[in-house]
Image 1 (cartoon, one colour):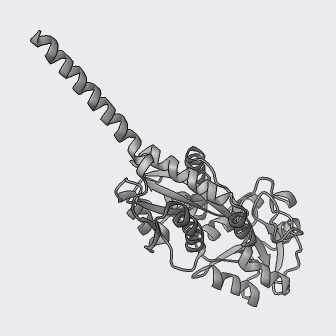
Image 2 (image 1 turned 30 degrees about the vertical axis):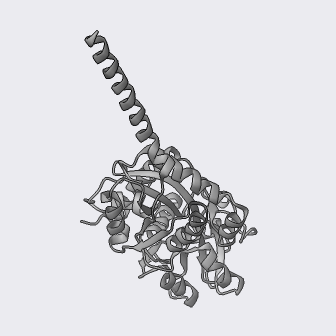
Image 3 (image 1 turned 45 degrees about the vertical axis):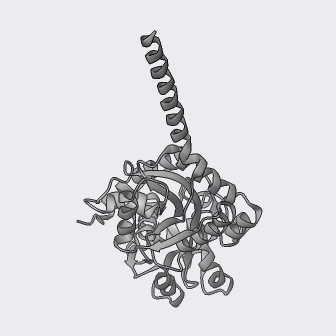
Length: 327
């Protein structure tokens, strides 16, 4: 009789622990978030990453009742901020903004990173793509991509091309490699001075952010030769893509996404993904991003992870050929 009672107690206790375990398993999704969420932005205030996280953060605060605290941690082409994200507690309360620079180009650009680009992060979703537009000083005798390629082949090593950071520099190198041309790529300290150099005629070409370049194009200070996205930009509908006018499959721009530390529970990652995708599909958010020339992506965690792996593979041979690997 006594043994039967003991068995009953053990069974009851086991059932209690199982129920508790199930409750704990559901807990991240049911109570998250219960406090503000820090988002590490690896670049300075006022840039695209800052704009995107603040645009989305406002909607998260409205729906979840928790603030997104923007934490700018700049340095080393985004390496500083990315490392802080990778090393943060994997509880969903520290996230990081990522770009194809921080999670694509840097994997090949630096001989040694303080984190693994793929293994140390849990991708949540990409927010959008800001395509580059190939812009030229009006004095350059080329009005499209095919004419530019022909001109560059006729005048090897004479045409200058400004860039304002590793993504735009690697985009120029990708164009060179794909087109089989020899142009002189000139680094500047930021995209703004790089585009200014093209406006002044100090250089002939540049890859500029579409939204920032449109006023200069409309004013006649720059000529748009092609857009770097695979589809035409809604803010430059008459400008063909580089891919459709000379280099099939060519794509150049900057994507932006949200990551968590690698060990973050999948329930939290999925909850974040669902909320961010919902926000990105809101008509007012979609229109606002399109108005700034962003192509909204809103993919799944698995799709984002695949995109990061593809980005690393894409840029490795370009970095090697250009001799840009840093120690």
